Image (cartoon, rainbow, N blue to C red):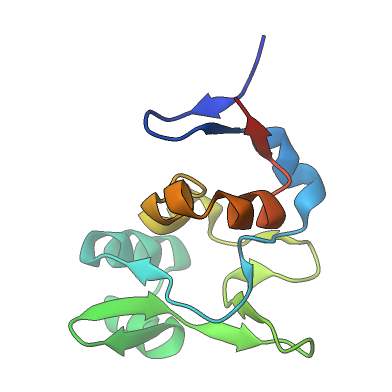
Length: 127
């Protein structure tokens, strides 16, 4: 039985087993925004046993009226999400990760930039 995830409007599939060999390509790379909603902030604060204000001050950047998870600069001139465990190569907040992370690789951007998602993610499969 196939475990491939398929989403309407995308001409590729995602095999979650690919994450086991990936080492976090979707969590490491160029700097960018990792958007997190107000509701997701509350859920993450509960998981981390922090107040919302503590979470915002320690782990989030305010960009206009929204929040983005902070990044850590790596020696390779890349960046990693501050919640990506570099030693274990996995997300330390997986159960409370924001929607942006949960929906990867099914982002509208990749509909027009398929070569990028194939290059970045070994779990992408042709349909």
